[in-house]
Length: 215
Image (cartoon, rainbow, N blue to C red):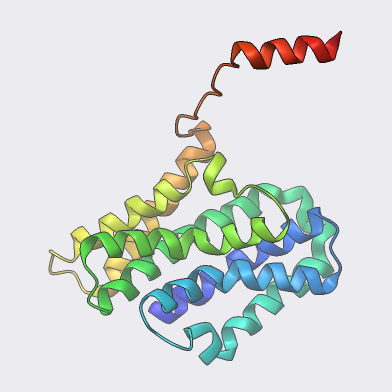
């Protein structure tokens, strides 16, 4: 079940990475690179932090293969998929749930403490998207909008709390995935966001300089 969910999450995120490449009009190689980094980037960083080297994505060729598959499908069917952007966002939310659960489970298997379990759940879920946005020179979406990383962190906390129950791993993975997915979906429907920082008021000297330039 762990491997199955990991592969599903990889495919879902590969689609979102490939579509970001299409948005920026990258070439085919760019589409594949963005799909791959979105699909496996967060998991690779997690594995490195846990001391698992080489990362799982480099030991199991199927991960890169699934990312390439997602990129190719996007290239071939982009005109048919584009009108159904809601489905792409749904896949992204599902991938978030999968990766939050996987990240928490991998950390727990490595004997990590509760804080690390929660943090690696969030990192696994959003790490690939951060790398994707940096590669196309954007401020990562997770830092400026949407109830996104918060949902993954809550999912990681839920997985840790479920370790105190008698539930086997598979139900814990599914419950964590469902909770994270549900939170993200609810936030998308309601337009929920965390409070944003307001810009600081301009100093008198700055205002004076602006007036001089305008004159």
